[in-house]
Amino acid sequence: MSEFTPQRNKAFVLEAFETLFNKKDFVAAEKFWSSNYIQHSAHIPPGRDGLFGLIKSAPPESKYENSLIMAEGDMLMLHGRFSGLGLPANWIALDIVRIENGLLAEHWDVIEDEVTREKSISGLPMFGAAFPS
Image (cartoon, rainbow, N blue to C red):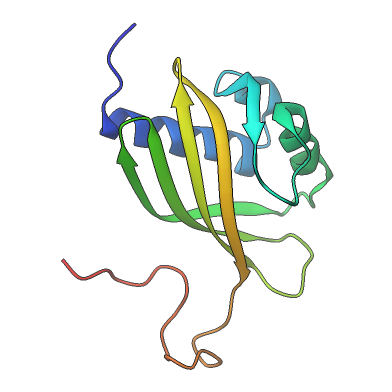
C-alpha cells in the first residue's frame, strides 16, 4: 500500500465527500468509508449505514461545498457548507475525520446555521472568506 501523505489524505477525503454528498453514489462511497465507521455526530445515526441512510433521506438538491481542509497525520478538518437540506438556513460545518487503513474510520462535527453577511455582526461571511496568508 502506498504511503498516505497529508496531500493524498486531503484529496481522498474531498473525493469521498464529493462521491457521497454530491454524487450520492452509495456503491462508490463504500470504498471510502470503513464498514466499522464510528460516528460521533448527535444528528447522524451510528455507523456507515447511519450516514448513508441520512444522505439517502436528504433532498436530491442537497450538496456539500468545501472551503478549507487541513491535515495532520491521519486526522483532517474540513470547513464547509451543506445546502439544499430543506432547512431555514444552510449549515456551516467543521467536520473532523480520522483515516485508518486507507478508509474514513471516525467522524466528529460542529454545525451552525449560516448567517448572511448582512446579518452578521462582523459583516464577514461564514463561508468562503479569504484567509490571511
